[in-house]
Image 1 (cartoon, helix red, strand yellow):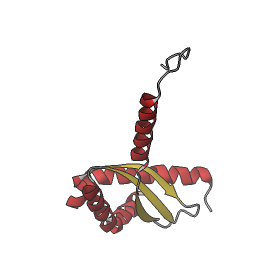
Image 2 (spheres, rainbow, N blue to C red):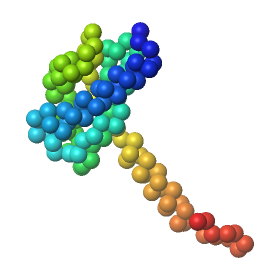
Image 3 (tube, rainbow, N blue to C red):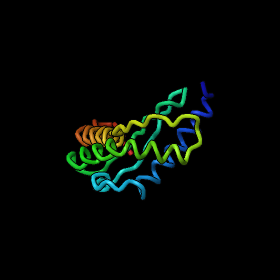
Length: 128
């Protein structure tokens, strides 16, 4: 089993390589429809599996098409990773949609809405 530092380094290297592939390597039109960025990569301790989290900007239909395009390009991505990243075995790549940015903006919007609905009581100072 690899050390945690090596796992982190491999994850960062995979993230960088897949980001480059998204810019210039993947020719599938479905992937180019939405703005796609790699937010995180989680690699298993034995370096055999990599979960790639991508953030996709666009409508739900565009996000679904982009995920379908990424899933169909998984074999190509793994082949290119095997050529660029020197590991004994190339990890299996699985793409996952990262919706944390949307959830975060929704929470901020809800907090702002709550803040606007509160009326200050007498003697209370206004929040800044």
